Each structure stands twice: as structure tokens, then as C-alpha cells.
Image 1: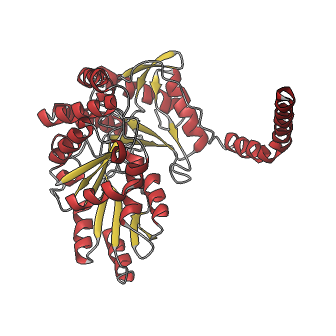
Image 2 (image 1 turned 45 degrees about the horizontal axis):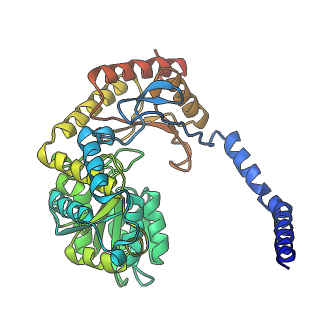
Length: 416
């Protein structure tokens, strides 16, 4: 009887596998979609890094100058962050093993949140698993079907997804245009709650949101303000305190979202601002309630990064010096670096195939800098997005400029 029952199970298993094989044809449409991406030079071939993230890295079997990472301050392989992570593993293990609201929270998470609140000069902060997740946490929690969200037309995908999850009406306003924002707010004056959301620094162009003007417009219409400062933390303001400090708007921006995966060099995200907002997020934000927190090693490393920035702005100053040197020299060579105001330097090519060829040629000459095309940026605005870092030496910057000149001339991006 046992054998007979087991045999029936095996037969059912074969029937199931046969059904799966039969239905594989329903995925054939993906072959066409993938081929279409290849035909349009939009298929992204991801390179493999084989070393720690430093100024120079080992990638796809060769040594290259890394001008592609958001490692603004060099924290991704900083000795103090490594030491903090290793100590945290020894004391707390490798993971929290459950959500904080059920199984309790670790002292490490509380300490990081307290440090972030002091660093940002706000009432409170709450940490999440990533910057992307932080937007998924705050936007749907604070807005709903009767509310209206006013979102800059170039906002990050995580903001767009957060708006969709909220079920609130989403209204786009013209990029960095407070006058258009004001007009849109007048149009929806009847909304129960109004939330204005903007990137602090726009990651593809490097320009800065006019938060001082946005806050004035918000106050006029009794609207909440939110800045996703993923590329401003560790970059703008005193010692990298972000866009609020940059404009002197301490406690005037209602919600500041940050990531720990760029200038802070690790992984994670947070929301900082009014205590009542943070308290409510602890009670109702789904990523806080239903997903385990970041690991002890990650949290301890993030905390060490905040300590370093609290102690000194030396790395931030070096970052800006490198960026200024690199950008002004590229401009002098005839490259188009767009409207950047930050260490993000877009080298505008405006042709997909040429941008891909430029990236490939740079890599062959020892520089890792990926091409950026649609859908990350609008069609016809293809570019190389160059990320400066405080750990780039003067010799590194010289090498980068010389290599860009050589490749730019060869491909006809600039003239000799």
C-alpha cells in the first residue's frame, strides 16, 4: 500500500512537470521584448566587481578607475566602518531574525536613529531597509484616496511607486518650477491633505531642488513638504547634513528621506522630521511592520559613518574640490555637462548607440562609467553619469580628464 501511494505521487509529479513544459510557450513574448532591448542598445549588461569598492576596482577581470558608484565619501570600504561592522557581528550576530515591532528592536537601531536625528537637527528619525523602501513606507502611510500629492516630474522611481501605492491623486508639476507648483496647488485647494514631494538632488542631472521656494509655496497653501535627499545626504550642507541644512530650513521641511547606500556607503534608509510623523510611521508603515530590519553589521557601519561626518567635514570638502576640478576641465574641453550643481557630472551624448560606445571605449581605456539611457532618463538625453568621490586623488582626476579627452575625440563627442 505504501509503495502504491508513493507511485501515485510520482505519477502526479510527472503530470505536473509535463503541464509546466507545455505552458512554457506563454513566456515566449519575453524573447521578443529582450531582443527589442538589444536591438535598441537598451539591454543593460551588468559588469561584475571583484574587489572592495575603492577609487580603483577590479571589474570584469581588469583594473579600472571607478567613476560609476555613488560612493561619494569613500565610506564603502572605510576602515572605521569595517571595524564597526565586525564588532557588531561579534556582539549581535548577523541578523535581527524578525520585525522590530514584534520581536523587539536592537539597541543598534535605536542608536542610529538618535544619531541621525541629531545630525539632521530634527525631532526624530526612523530607519528602514533601504532608501527605496523608505519612500514606500512614508508616502502611502501619510496619504490616501482623499489626498493630493504634488510630485516633481523628474522625481525618482521610488517616489512614483510610493505615490501609486498611496491611492492618492498624483499631480506632476514642472521640474524645479515653484510657480507651476503654486498653480497646481491652487487648482486642488479642495484636497483634504496636500503633500509636495521632490528629490533634493536629482540623480541624473545633478541639479538641486529650490527647497526654500518650495517651502514658501507650501506654507501659502498649507501643504506638507517632503524631500528625498538620497544624493544630498553626505554631500550638501555643513558636513553633509543635507538639503535642509543647505537652505537653512531646519524643521521646516516636514519629511526628509535619506539613504545609507550612497554617501554613507552601506545600505538602508530613513525618514527624519517631526516626532509625530515618526511615531505614526512606527505604528502603521508597512515596511516597518512586515519586513525585518537591516542587519547589525549594516546598522553599525551606518552609525560609524554618521560619527565621522559629525566629527569633520574634510571628506565633504575633498569631494566638492574633486568635482569642481573634473567638471570645469571637461567643460573646457567642450563636453556638455548639463545643468549640474553637485558632484554628479552628466556627460551628455544624446544618442543611445554613441553613449554605449563611449562607455565601452572608456572601459577599454581603464575607466568604469556606464551609459544611461531610457527609461532611466528621457529619450534623446542619453549620457554618461560620472560620480566623483573624495577618495579620487589628483592623479586619478588627471587620468580621467585625459582619458575622456582621448575617447571623446575618437568618437566625435568633442573636437580636437
